[in-house]
Length: 393
Image 1 (tube, rainbow, N blue to C red):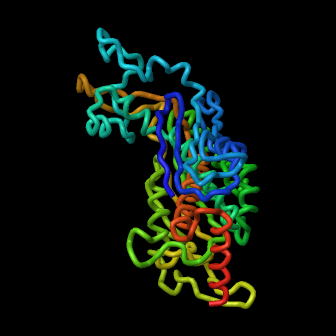
Image 2 (image 1 turned 90 degrees about the vertical axis):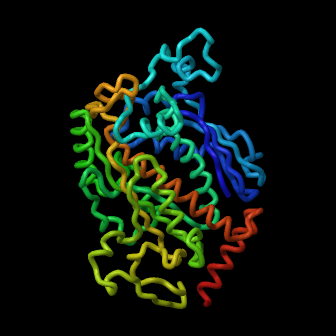
Image 3 (image 1 turned 60 degrees about the vertical axis):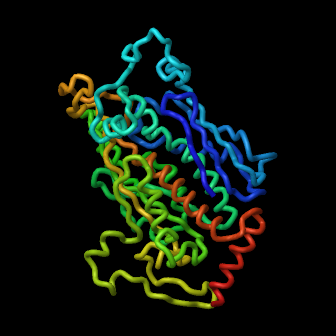
């Protein structure tokens, strides 16, 4: 199972083509649009979220609400495109026009972005050619793809939820969700402006975001994704590129501005003894094998254990600042304050939605690769059989 995306931040649309989905999977634009709306929300978002109201069009691979087994094509149109048709035009420039005359041409790379290195790599003197694709705007269509993956996982009895655990050092109290299911956590975070489960911490997060915005600065944080209902044995220990945690780590770090990832108690393991890290195995007739704790985050030896998968990612502060940092003009080589594009003071809440969707995709992909998956009923039957075998092992 794979997908490709295409499109620029201020282009006419973002496009994704998904190949390898089982046939007979129920999919509607409505369920995808719910995730797209969540991505545009969360406290700290900038003016662009007021301009664009992202919705998806399913333009291939689905008939009468169910997948056909052929590639599924998704389109998220850009409502702001009408203001960028000349600047981002597709057709060649007139022969008598100097490219330097293009409005909103960018020659001042922004620190922390792909601008300068991308310009060097691809030979662009107008750095807009870099920032238009490297923009986090591309995550809109990745959320749409991940929403499709979540629909598949739901059919298999697997729930995925992402949420914020920390912004600018303000930590949510994780005891408030101890023992709660993914669906219960979702209800808590969807009603919160920072997409967290701790209302007291959320109020402090809002204040920190507002202060950063007032100062023309930005702040980052940590998001967590929980995957519940996983059958054991997804992934493999036999080769490095088949390990499930390796795939999930890659997915998390592929999100714009993410710089770190951990599972379970993560880096805290370095400060504990082995007896305080590893999860003891228990068994009972009703549930079969379980772990007394879940400090390893539901993965052992590169494989799912059946316990909830807990994966966490850290997002750096957005580098586009209204208090711009110093840079150098690539044409004159003179120092300047870096160019400013529309930006957010904090996109951590929105990033939790992106993280939820990219993790859902990798989980679904790993399952589809491991089991016969041409048709959804066949896949469901195999997952049920694996759960039964694990319980009776």
